[in-house]
Image (spheres, rainbow, N blue to C red):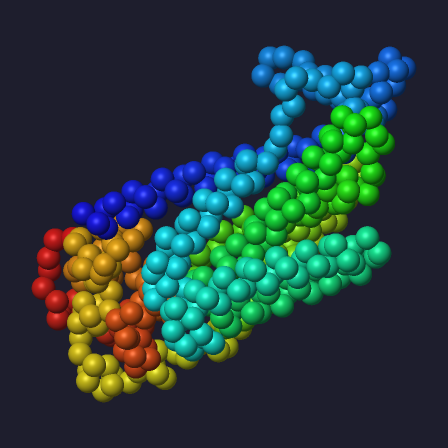
Length: 414
């Protein structure tokens, strides 16, 4: 019952997070698009104090959007703010991080061979990682950005690259990409909380007082909003990446993460330029070529560094470790079973059940990558040895062993 309640709570928070994130990203995309499409107003618009205007059609209606140089002659009674999308996204993501990665750090966050010695230390490292990343960004933005945007951009790129490498050393392979995404999302929410909203409040207070608003805070707020716009695609990638162990389970996963973040920001740059009427078709071509090279490079390096089953597990060694199904029973069926025994699982993850030899053989193409990348068993909570891992890989890959499996295990219903 507790596992079922946990799953329901997880689902509801995840739904809230996804909906809020869609609203936040949609608002970010829309306002950057809007700013880039504003046209010089006509004489009547200029007389009203407009800096730009836009005509659009949507949902069976025609809209006129105008942006004032400062403010309208009379402030409206209701002024809409765009902040709760960001706050709700971050708060719900913090709840998910706590529920899944901190609550079961032994399974999801911590991994043998990483720097933290225990799951508890890994949780502390995660909190420090997020706080330090936000602090570094704020210091760079507040003290360096006003003096040199180019130097700021270069140091920000270096900071993100270091954060990619550091995540691969501190956290499990599964959690590393997500931690980088959480860091970028924290910086984005910080941009809203520490920069954009305070600047807008100061702007309105100055207008109410009949004073000329300072231009610098609003310009800084616009820059923060643009940074958030460039972070969106890398963050979305990081949040989806834990479904793809061929990326995060690779020996050079931190380099792959740097490449994917850079490609995501580069693709976003294409759309931002396009909104300003600049069609740079070489950008998506270069991005596509970069993605292809990344895929080929990861495949080749994985092939070069991965030991072959025949080299790692001889027939004699495999025989001494028992039949393959006994390894599955010991190391896999705790989660991947019709009735999981591992705490926190009310059903088999992804619907993958491995109760019978037939189910194991049918899922061979799904199992092998996770074994090679050491993503499974999750957190290696069952203590699978390297010899057992290679023996199971060999049993699933080798035709001779497959034939032995078919005669060793009696036929049973899935």
